[in-house]
Each structure stands twice: as C-alpha cells, then as structure tokens.
Length: 256
Ligand code: NI
Image (cartoon, rainbow, N blue to C red; front, side):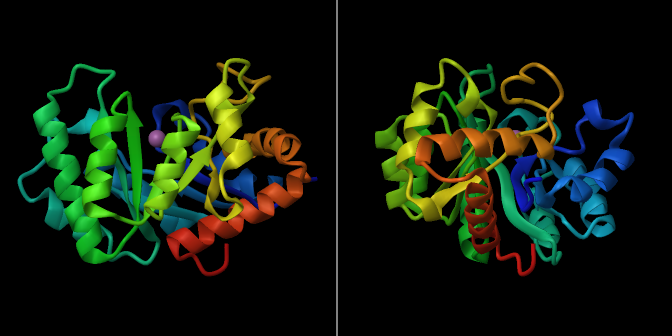
C-alpha cells in the first residue's frame, strides 16, 4: 500500500463532507495519509477548520479570504487573520487570490489580495494562491511582493510555471493531471523542479480519473502520484515521499 500521502490543499469543511466527516477524517491516516492542509475560504471557515486541526494530529489549516467570499468581510479582517496565524497549526495565509471566471468586482478582489499579500510578507508566512483566469494580475502582484508559498491547482503553461518557480514559489498539481485534455498539467508535471512540486486534491472537487465527478478525498492522491510517477520515470511512492517532504519544508511542519 502507498503511504506518506500529503494533501497540500483541500476543503474538509465543505458541506459535501457533512454526512460522514468524522468517519472519513479518522480513516485517512489508516489509508496512508500522513498530512493534510485544509484551506480556509473566509474567517468562519478558518475557525471551523481550526477545530479539525486541534482534533487530528495530521491536519493543518490556513486562514484567509478567497476571492469568492468577500461579501461579509469585517473591517478588521487583517487583524483577525493575523490572530489566527499565531496558532501553531495555522501554516499559511490562504486561500487568497483572483478569480476572473466569476463576476466579482475586480477592484475589491485586487485590494483584498494585495492587503493579504502585504500581511503575509510582513509576518513571514507562506501564501496559498488561487488564480482562475487571472494569470496577468496575479503574477504582477506576486512579482511586486515576492511572498513564499504555493500556486494551488496550477493550470498555467510551462513558461508561467518557470516564472512562478523563479519567484521562489512552488506549485501543486492534483486530479487534473489525469484528465485527457490536461496538456499543460502534464508538461508542468514533467518539467517542474523536483523540490518545487506538491500534490493536492482540492477536495471535495477535482477527483482524478477514474473517479472524475465523484467526491474527492486525500486518499485519491495515490492516483495522481501514479500518473506523475509515469511521467517522471519514478515510483509512485518516490513521488509521494518527495512531495510530502516539499510540503513539510514549505509550510514549516516538523513531523508530518
Ligand atoms: Ni481550494
């Protein structure tokens, strides 16, 4: 059985897990999962997932405002995020970024993304970046602030991947790499430097083939690792070990 599965990005507070969350979170370590970073989408979400991190040793969490969740942002949101980031298991400011797929006011998205980048750089914590159809503006802010961190569910070209790497950041790949039309992801999986690659589910979404469309969870990273192993000429276990070590290093986790 494969082990040392580290899921660098998922959302276990999603309502899709409401029915059986406790059973699932208890099962994952027995199924080879050694670490999970469950990501916040707003303050409420950060407080809920802090509870999971306090209950399960293998779970870590982030705090941040996702561009789709800017509606009830309190005025003191930066102070409250900074408070959460003092928690020993709060490992990053995320997920933050830009989403130009949905009709969300861009000036608001840009302001909140920039303020959160400033906070992360000031505190010296990594960021987890969401970039959907907004590569240009995302990259120009990353160039300006140079945070350390992760471009999650990376969907860009190899050229963009090289630029992300040259800024000192890492990328994570997930189920998309197993999809038939995933040319960019496969090229990035082949060419990303070994020490800058992390694996993620983005659970409950983005299940790999042959589970596409079903609810995703951290165990399915085994399928992503098998695909990347085939692309890079490694074993799946080697891919899992390297990516788990990269995640621990990036997020400052001692014993995943
Ligand atoms: Ni996400």
